[in-house]
Length: 367
Image 1 (cartoon, rainbow, N blue to C red):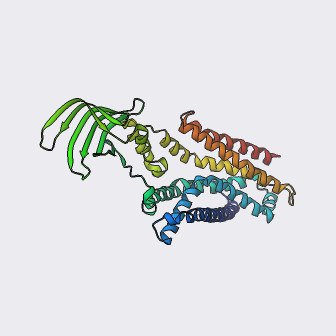
Image 2: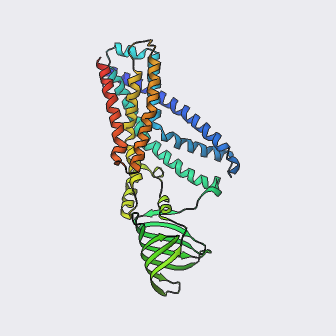
Image 3: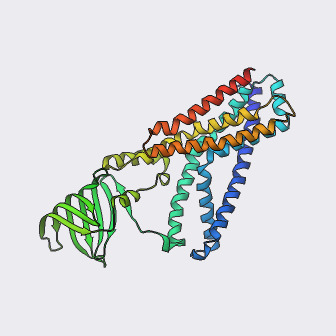
Protein backbone atom coordinates (compact mmCIF):
# COMPACT_ATOMS: atom_id res chain seq x y z
CA UNK A 1 0.00 0.00 0.00
CA UNK A 2 1.11 3.61 -0.72
CA UNK A 3 1.10 6.07 2.20
CA UNK A 4 -2.22 7.63 1.07
CA UNK A 5 -3.82 4.24 0.67
CA UNK A 6 -2.52 3.19 4.08
CA UNK A 7 -3.96 6.31 5.71
CA UNK A 8 -7.32 5.70 4.02
CA UNK A 9 -7.30 2.06 5.07
CA UNK A 10 -6.68 2.93 8.72
CA UNK A 11 -9.36 5.63 8.60
CA UNK A 12 -11.98 3.22 7.18
CA UNK A 13 -10.82 0.47 9.56
CA UNK A 14 -11.19 2.82 12.54
CA UNK A 15 -14.74 3.77 11.47
CA UNK A 16 -15.67 0.15 10.80
CA UNK A 17 -14.39 -1.12 14.14
CA UNK A 18 -16.20 1.73 15.93
CA UNK A 19 -19.41 0.81 14.11
CA UNK A 20 -18.95 -2.87 14.92
CA UNK A 21 -18.34 -2.18 18.63
CA UNK A 22 -21.36 0.15 18.78
CA UNK A 23 -23.67 -2.43 17.14
CA UNK A 24 -22.27 -5.23 19.33
CA UNK A 25 -22.76 -3.25 22.55
CA UNK A 26 -26.29 -2.14 21.62
CA UNK A 27 -27.42 -5.65 20.61
CA UNK A 28 -25.73 -7.21 23.65
CA UNK A 29 -27.55 -4.74 25.91
CA UNK A 30 -30.90 -5.51 24.26
CA UNK A 31 -30.33 -9.28 24.45
CA UNK A 32 -29.20 -9.05 28.10
CA UNK A 33 -32.28 -6.99 28.98
CA UNK A 34 -34.60 -9.52 27.31
CA UNK A 35 -32.82 -12.46 28.95
CA UNK A 36 -32.94 -10.65 32.28
CA UNK A 37 -36.67 -9.97 32.03
CA UNK A 38 -37.28 -13.59 31.05
CA UNK A 39 -35.10 -14.80 33.92
CA UNK A 40 -36.81 -12.55 36.47
CA UNK A 41 -40.06 -14.42 35.86
CA UNK A 42 -38.40 -17.60 37.16
CA UNK A 43 -36.16 -16.09 39.81
CA UNK A 44 -38.40 -17.44 42.57
CA UNK A 45 -37.30 -20.97 41.58
CA UNK A 46 -33.63 -20.01 41.45
CA UNK A 47 -31.50 -20.69 44.48
CA UNK A 48 -28.90 -17.95 44.02
CA UNK A 49 -28.01 -14.34 44.79
CA UNK A 50 -28.50 -11.39 42.44
CA UNK A 51 -24.84 -11.17 41.32
CA UNK A 52 -24.78 -14.88 40.54
CA UNK A 53 -27.99 -14.45 38.53
CA UNK A 54 -26.52 -11.41 36.73
CA UNK A 55 -23.40 -13.40 35.74
CA UNK A 56 -25.67 -16.17 34.41
CA UNK A 57 -27.57 -13.62 32.27
CA UNK A 58 -24.29 -12.23 30.86
CA UNK A 59 -23.13 -15.73 29.88
CA UNK A 60 -26.50 -16.49 28.30
CA UNK A 61 -26.36 -13.23 26.32
CA UNK A 62 -22.88 -14.13 24.99
CA UNK A 63 -24.26 -17.45 23.71
CA UNK A 64 -27.25 -15.73 22.09
CA UNK A 65 -25.07 -13.07 20.42
CA UNK A 66 -22.80 -15.79 19.04
CA UNK A 67 -25.71 -17.38 17.17
CA UNK A 68 -26.10 -14.34 14.89
CA UNK A 69 -22.58 -12.89 14.94
CA UNK A 70 -22.27 -12.65 11.11
CA UNK A 71 -25.45 -10.56 11.11
CA UNK A 72 -23.76 -8.12 13.52
CA UNK A 73 -20.95 -7.56 11.00
CA UNK A 74 -23.62 -6.93 8.37
CA UNK A 75 -25.24 -4.22 10.51
CA UNK A 76 -21.79 -2.80 11.33
CA UNK A 77 -21.05 -2.47 7.59
CA UNK A 78 -24.34 -0.63 7.04
CA UNK A 79 -23.69 1.73 9.97
CA UNK A 80 -20.12 2.43 8.80
CA UNK A 81 -21.23 3.21 5.23
CA UNK A 82 -24.16 5.29 6.51
CA UNK A 83 -21.81 7.47 8.56
CA UNK A 84 -19.36 7.84 5.69
CA UNK A 85 -22.21 8.75 3.33
CA UNK A 86 -23.83 11.24 5.70
CA UNK A 87 -20.52 13.10 6.06
CA UNK A 88 -20.09 12.93 2.24
CA UNK A 89 -16.76 11.22 2.84
CA UNK A 90 -17.49 8.52 0.28
CA UNK A 91 -18.10 11.22 -2.31
CA UNK A 92 -14.76 12.86 -1.47
CA UNK A 93 -13.00 9.49 -1.66
CA UNK A 94 -14.57 8.85 -5.06
CA UNK A 95 -13.50 12.30 -6.28
CA UNK A 96 -9.92 11.43 -5.39
CA UNK A 97 -10.13 8.62 -7.96
CA UNK A 98 -10.45 5.76 -5.48
CA UNK A 99 -12.83 3.09 -6.72
CA UNK A 100 -15.77 1.53 -4.89
CA UNK A 101 -14.00 -1.84 -4.98
CA UNK A 102 -11.03 -0.47 -3.05
CA UNK A 103 -13.33 0.81 -0.29
CA UNK A 104 -15.04 -2.60 -0.19
CA UNK A 105 -11.62 -4.25 -0.15
CA UNK A 106 -10.61 -2.28 2.96
CA UNK A 107 -13.87 -3.09 4.72
CA UNK A 108 -13.47 -6.76 3.76
CA UNK A 109 -10.03 -6.88 5.40
CA UNK A 110 -11.59 -5.56 8.61
CA UNK A 111 -14.41 -8.10 8.33
CA UNK A 112 -11.92 -10.97 7.86
CA UNK A 113 -10.07 -9.87 11.02
CA UNK A 114 -13.37 -9.79 12.93
CA UNK A 115 -14.24 -13.21 11.49
CA UNK A 116 -10.91 -14.58 12.70
CA UNK A 117 -11.65 -13.08 16.12
CA UNK A 118 -15.07 -14.77 16.05
CA UNK A 119 -13.86 -18.31 15.34
CA UNK A 120 -11.00 -18.08 17.86
CA UNK A 121 -11.52 -15.76 20.83
CA UNK A 122 -15.30 -15.40 20.66
CA UNK A 123 -15.80 -19.10 19.98
CA UNK A 124 -13.72 -19.89 23.07
CA UNK A 125 -15.80 -17.42 25.11
CA UNK A 126 -19.05 -18.92 23.86
CA UNK A 127 -17.96 -22.48 24.61
CA UNK A 128 -16.82 -21.45 28.06
CA UNK A 129 -20.13 -19.65 28.64
CA UNK A 130 -22.16 -22.74 27.64
CA UNK A 131 -20.13 -25.00 29.93
CA UNK A 132 -20.30 -22.55 32.82
CA UNK A 133 -24.06 -22.11 32.33
CA UNK A 134 -24.54 -25.86 32.55
CA UNK A 135 -22.71 -25.95 35.89
CA UNK A 136 -24.60 -22.91 37.14
CA UNK A 137 -27.98 -24.38 36.21
CA UNK A 138 -27.30 -27.29 38.54
CA UNK A 139 -26.98 -24.80 41.39
CA UNK A 140 -29.68 -22.33 40.29
CA UNK A 141 -32.32 -24.88 39.25
CA UNK A 142 -31.28 -28.15 40.89
CA UNK A 143 -34.74 -29.69 40.68
CA UNK A 144 -34.89 -29.31 36.90
CA UNK A 145 -31.48 -30.82 36.13
CA UNK A 146 -30.99 -34.37 34.98
CA UNK A 147 -28.07 -36.29 36.40
CA UNK A 148 -26.93 -37.92 33.16
CA UNK A 149 -23.21 -38.65 33.09
CA UNK A 150 -21.42 -39.64 29.91
CA UNK A 151 -17.73 -39.60 28.99
CA UNK A 152 -15.86 -40.51 25.83
CA UNK A 153 -12.21 -41.57 25.99
CA UNK A 154 -9.79 -43.33 23.67
CA UNK A 155 -10.76 -46.64 25.31
CA UNK A 156 -14.49 -46.22 24.59
CA UNK A 157 -17.56 -44.73 26.27
CA UNK A 158 -18.42 -44.51 29.95
CA UNK A 159 -21.84 -43.74 31.37
CA UNK A 160 -24.03 -44.36 34.38
CA UNK A 161 -27.32 -46.23 34.67
CA UNK A 162 -29.69 -46.93 37.54
CA UNK A 163 -32.66 -49.14 38.26
CA UNK A 164 -34.72 -49.88 41.37
CA UNK A 165 -32.04 -52.19 42.81
CA UNK A 166 -28.67 -51.16 41.45
CA UNK A 167 -26.42 -48.33 40.35
CA UNK A 168 -24.31 -49.22 37.32
CA UNK A 169 -21.13 -47.81 35.83
CA UNK A 170 -20.91 -49.00 32.23
CA UNK A 171 -18.00 -49.07 29.81
CA UNK A 172 -18.28 -50.11 26.15
CA UNK A 173 -15.42 -50.36 23.71
CA UNK A 174 -17.62 -49.40 20.76
CA UNK A 175 -21.24 -48.83 19.74
CA UNK A 176 -23.19 -49.85 16.67
CA UNK A 177 -25.90 -47.21 16.36
CA UNK A 178 -27.60 -48.81 13.35
CA UNK A 179 -28.00 -52.18 15.04
CA UNK A 180 -28.36 -50.59 18.49
CA UNK A 181 -25.75 -52.72 20.19
CA UNK A 182 -22.75 -52.12 22.44
CA UNK A 183 -19.62 -54.19 21.91
CA UNK A 184 -17.15 -55.46 24.50
CA UNK A 185 -19.11 -54.09 27.45
CA UNK A 186 -18.17 -54.01 31.16
CA UNK A 187 -20.69 -53.22 33.89
CA UNK A 188 -19.76 -52.47 37.49
CA UNK A 189 -22.88 -53.31 39.47
CA UNK A 190 -23.25 -51.35 42.73
CA UNK A 191 -25.86 -51.43 45.44
CA UNK A 192 -27.85 -48.33 46.31
CA UNK A 193 -25.28 -47.76 49.07
CA UNK A 194 -22.56 -47.95 46.37
CA UNK A 195 -20.96 -51.17 47.59
CA UNK A 196 -19.62 -53.44 44.81
CA UNK A 197 -21.91 -56.37 43.94
CA UNK A 198 -20.60 -57.76 40.64
CA UNK A 199 -18.34 -56.96 37.71
CA UNK A 200 -19.99 -58.11 34.50
CA UNK A 201 -18.31 -58.51 31.13
CA UNK A 202 -20.23 -59.27 27.91
CA UNK A 203 -19.19 -59.53 24.27
CA UNK A 204 -22.12 -57.40 23.18
CA UNK A 205 -25.36 -56.00 24.52
CA UNK A 206 -28.62 -54.47 23.36
CA UNK A 207 -31.57 -52.77 25.05
CA UNK A 208 -35.06 -54.19 24.58
CA UNK A 209 -38.24 -53.52 26.54
CA UNK A 210 -36.43 -51.70 29.34
CA UNK A 211 -33.75 -54.35 29.84
CA UNK A 212 -30.08 -54.81 29.07
CA UNK A 213 -29.69 -58.03 27.06
CA UNK A 214 -26.11 -59.15 27.65
CA UNK A 215 -24.66 -62.02 25.57
CA UNK A 216 -21.70 -64.28 26.37
CA UNK A 217 -21.50 -63.02 29.93
CA UNK A 218 -18.73 -63.45 32.51
CA UNK A 219 -19.71 -62.40 36.07
CA UNK A 220 -16.91 -61.77 38.58
CA UNK A 221 -17.99 -61.95 42.22
CA UNK A 222 -16.37 -60.06 45.15
CA UNK A 223 -15.14 -63.41 46.51
CA UNK A 224 -13.15 -63.95 43.26
CA UNK A 225 -15.55 -66.64 41.97
CA UNK A 226 -16.60 -66.49 38.30
CA UNK A 227 -19.89 -67.38 36.64
CA UNK A 228 -20.46 -67.78 32.88
CA UNK A 229 -23.86 -67.17 31.26
CA UNK A 230 -25.02 -67.13 27.66
CA UNK A 231 -27.63 -64.44 28.35
CA UNK A 232 -28.26 -62.00 31.21
CA UNK A 233 -31.06 -59.49 31.57
CA UNK A 234 -30.75 -56.38 33.78
CA UNK A 235 -33.51 -53.74 34.12
CA UNK A 236 -32.54 -50.30 32.80
CA UNK A 237 -34.01 -46.83 32.46
CA UNK A 238 -31.93 -46.14 29.35
CA UNK A 239 -32.63 -46.41 25.63
CA UNK A 240 -30.21 -45.94 22.74
CA UNK A 241 -31.78 -42.56 22.00
CA UNK A 242 -31.05 -41.50 25.58
CA UNK A 243 -27.47 -42.74 25.31
CA UNK A 244 -27.00 -40.81 22.06
CA UNK A 245 -28.49 -37.67 23.64
CA UNK A 246 -25.92 -37.84 26.47
CA UNK A 247 -23.15 -36.93 24.02
CA UNK A 248 -21.59 -33.51 24.44
CA UNK A 249 -23.32 -30.89 22.31
CA UNK A 250 -21.11 -29.64 19.48
CA UNK A 251 -21.14 -26.06 20.78
CA UNK A 252 -19.70 -27.20 24.13
CA UNK A 253 -16.46 -28.36 22.51
CA UNK A 254 -13.67 -25.91 21.75
CA UNK A 255 -13.19 -25.50 18.00
CA UNK A 256 -9.60 -26.79 17.94
CA UNK A 257 -10.65 -29.95 19.81
CA UNK A 258 -13.59 -30.93 17.61
CA UNK A 259 -11.40 -32.76 15.08
CA UNK A 260 -9.92 -35.02 17.80
CA UNK A 261 -13.39 -35.60 19.23
CA UNK A 262 -14.66 -36.61 15.77
CA UNK A 263 -11.78 -39.12 15.41
CA UNK A 264 -12.68 -40.72 18.77
CA UNK A 265 -16.38 -40.88 17.84
CA UNK A 266 -15.51 -42.53 14.52
CA UNK A 267 -13.49 -45.19 16.29
CA UNK A 268 -16.24 -45.88 18.81
CA UNK A 269 -18.97 -45.97 16.17
CA UNK A 270 -21.03 -42.91 17.15
CA UNK A 271 -22.43 -40.42 14.66
CA UNK A 272 -20.12 -37.48 13.95
CA UNK A 273 -22.31 -35.48 11.59
CA UNK A 274 -23.33 -32.80 14.12
CA UNK A 275 -19.71 -32.19 15.05
CA UNK A 276 -18.57 -31.98 11.43
CA UNK A 277 -21.34 -29.48 10.68
CA UNK A 278 -20.30 -27.44 13.74
CA UNK A 279 -16.64 -27.45 12.66
CA UNK A 280 -17.29 -26.52 9.02
CA UNK A 281 -19.99 -23.96 9.84
CA UNK A 282 -17.52 -22.17 12.12
CA UNK A 283 -14.83 -22.25 9.42
CA UNK A 284 -17.29 -21.01 6.78
CA UNK A 285 -18.46 -18.15 9.01
CA UNK A 286 -15.72 -15.89 7.60
CA UNK A 287 -17.11 -16.43 4.08
CA UNK A 288 -20.59 -15.81 5.43
CA UNK A 289 -19.41 -12.57 7.04
CA UNK A 290 -17.83 -11.49 3.71
CA UNK A 291 -21.07 -12.32 1.89
CA UNK A 292 -23.01 -10.08 4.29
CA UNK A 293 -20.42 -7.32 3.77
CA UNK A 294 -20.93 -7.53 -0.01
CA UNK A 295 -24.70 -7.47 0.44
CA UNK A 296 -24.52 -4.36 2.64
CA UNK A 297 -21.99 -2.63 0.38
CA UNK A 298 -24.03 -3.24 -2.78
CA UNK A 299 -27.05 -1.42 -1.36
CA UNK A 300 -25.29 1.20 0.80
CA UNK A 301 -22.41 2.53 -1.34
CA UNK A 302 -23.77 5.37 -3.46
CA UNK A 303 -22.32 8.02 -5.72
CA UNK A 304 -25.00 10.70 -5.72
CA UNK A 305 -25.29 12.85 -2.57
CA UNK A 306 -28.75 13.52 -1.11
CA UNK A 307 -30.16 10.46 -2.85
CA UNK A 308 -33.78 10.21 -1.70
CA UNK A 309 -33.89 6.48 -2.40
CA UNK A 310 -30.78 5.71 -0.37
CA UNK A 311 -32.53 4.85 2.89
CA UNK A 312 -35.00 2.72 0.96
CA UNK A 313 -32.06 0.69 -0.35
CA UNK A 314 -30.69 0.35 3.17
CA UNK A 315 -34.06 -1.03 4.32
CA UNK A 316 -34.10 -3.46 1.37
CA UNK A 317 -30.63 -4.70 2.36
CA UNK A 318 -31.75 -5.33 5.95
CA UNK A 319 -34.94 -7.09 4.80
CA UNK A 320 -32.95 -9.30 2.39
CA UNK A 321 -30.49 -10.27 5.13
CA UNK A 322 -33.15 -12.10 7.15
CA UNK A 323 -34.14 -14.68 4.48
CA UNK A 324 -30.45 -15.09 3.59
CA UNK A 325 -29.64 -15.93 7.21
CA UNK A 326 -32.74 -18.14 7.42
CA UNK A 327 -31.78 -20.11 4.27
CA UNK A 328 -28.27 -20.66 5.63
CA UNK A 329 -29.75 -22.03 8.88
CA UNK A 330 -32.06 -24.37 6.93
CA UNK A 331 -29.13 -25.73 4.90
CA UNK A 332 -27.19 -26.42 8.10
CA UNK A 333 -30.24 -28.27 9.47
CA UNK A 334 -30.34 -30.36 6.27
CA UNK A 335 -26.65 -31.10 6.76
CA UNK A 336 -27.26 -32.32 10.33
CA UNK A 337 -30.06 -34.57 9.04
CA UNK A 338 -27.64 -35.86 6.35
CA UNK A 339 -30.00 -34.79 3.56
CA UNK A 340 -27.08 -32.97 1.92
CA UNK A 341 -23.32 -33.19 2.39
CA UNK A 342 -21.62 -31.21 5.15
CA UNK A 343 -19.64 -29.13 2.63
CA UNK A 344 -22.79 -28.19 0.69
CA UNK A 345 -24.61 -27.38 3.91
CA UNK A 346 -21.94 -25.05 5.25
CA UNK A 347 -19.90 -23.63 2.35
CA UNK A 348 -21.94 -23.63 -0.87
CA UNK A 349 -24.54 -20.97 -0.04
CA UNK A 350 -22.11 -18.42 1.55
CA UNK A 351 -19.72 -18.82 -1.40
CA UNK A 352 -22.54 -18.37 -3.95
CA UNK A 353 -23.87 -15.32 -2.09
CA UNK A 354 -20.41 -13.78 -1.80
CA UNK A 355 -19.68 -14.38 -5.49
CA UNK A 356 -23.04 -12.94 -6.60
CA UNK A 357 -22.78 -9.66 -4.70
CA UNK A 358 -19.07 -9.29 -5.49
CA UNK A 359 -19.97 -9.54 -9.18
CA UNK A 360 -22.82 -7.02 -8.79
CA UNK A 361 -20.50 -4.64 -6.95
CA UNK A 362 -17.87 -4.99 -9.66
CA UNK A 363 -20.47 -4.16 -12.32
CA UNK A 364 -21.59 -1.18 -10.25
CA UNK A 365 -18.00 0.05 -9.96
CA UNK A 366 -17.48 -0.24 -13.73
CA UNK A 367 -20.57 1.80 -14.66
